[in-house]
Length: 87
Image 1: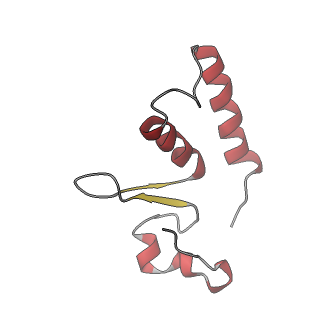
Image 2: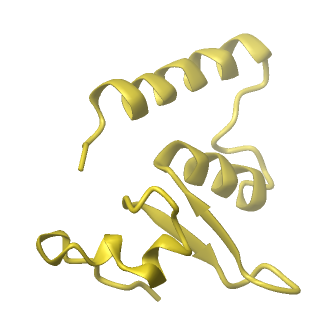
């Protein structure tokens, strides 16, 4: 399931949202399949890494060598911090 966040209403700054992401920014993932309780992950790069570590059990989104993984992480973090959307 997903919840629509309308930025023009600043609902991402409301208390219910701040409890999920203290930065008051989108994007957030709440993994309700995590037991015993849901886990919340915010920031796009952290969400991508969480999804890879939890759900990519066959290694389709990872690399066999540390050098290739390092290059992936460099570009991911560059895109996240350098050219990603700002609110």
